Length: 204
Image (tube, rainbow, N blue to C red):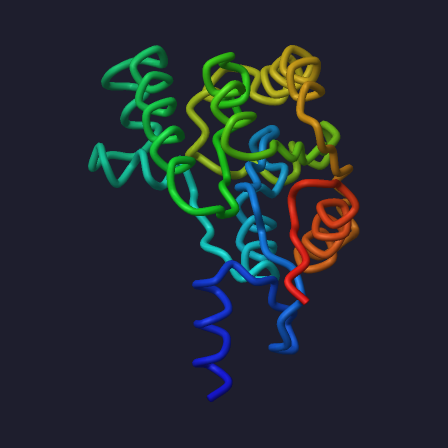
């Protein structure tokens, strides 16, 4: 019975706490997580979606599934402009469905067409992590094509400096604390969403 209740709540988009009890709130707009690689968009997004009882959608994963290739392979084979076009198409498709938590690639929010689409169908939440936190999280990963340079840390710092002014356009910002767990960060994100009008609707 408990699992059935959780499934029903998820289909209705009703927030669900880890205890299994539903929160008297319904998600009205998709939550689109934006920010740098390594900021925690996928991990926090999954935890947040579980708390809200809505689907979690990963735009990078959707791109890879559609292309039958990894992001790194797409970059190497087709180039970044081709990838950005496919990214915009996939993001538009994900946002056309019911409200969900959507994780995006680090460069997605840089494109004005994506920012317009996100604003129309959802709300952007920027996970703001500092350089040291980002570097510790990505330094040993080989799946980041933009960091395949002679000085990956310097490249990461340059990307962060260039992208931060655009990330600041997101209406919601959550500072990432590297000492916090994924669950704690997701709980802070939920509190931020609850305090912002027009995102969660009371169903009590």
